[in-house]
Image 1: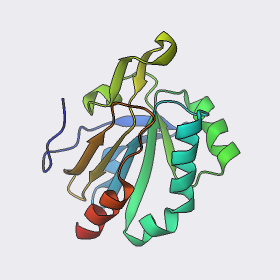
Image 2: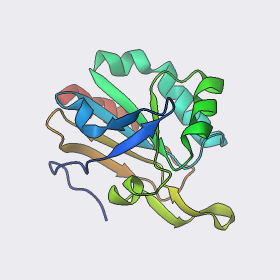
Image 3: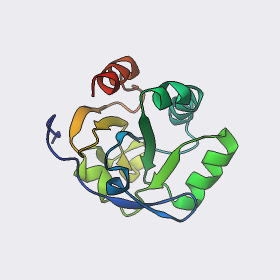
Image 4: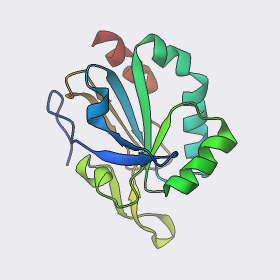
Length: 155
């Protein structure tokens, strides 16, 4: 399943690292880059999110909010955010409802772990419609961040 460009992004409400409920609807009128990632504290996820931290000024310049989503608990994500100095919201899809809605979900991941977010990137415009969608089958592959920046610059 993949979400078509121009279609409404699936709505969600998830808890962040401060136990605050965050909804996609909170960002109406803003561009949002949603990044699904498999697991906090793993090497590729840490590298990806730290690169986002280091590029935040670029995304701010494109008027884009970044939301990182994984199936980790809010408590794990809080520790991960603190240890890596991440400067954007991390949301917990612990109940595994949002990742499948976006087609970014492994039924079975490495080590027979069930229900893990795939690495994926979605750009949602201010009207709540998807303008970019990329879901990686291999957790070792990163989204095309140059293409993402191009899309953000155009909308």
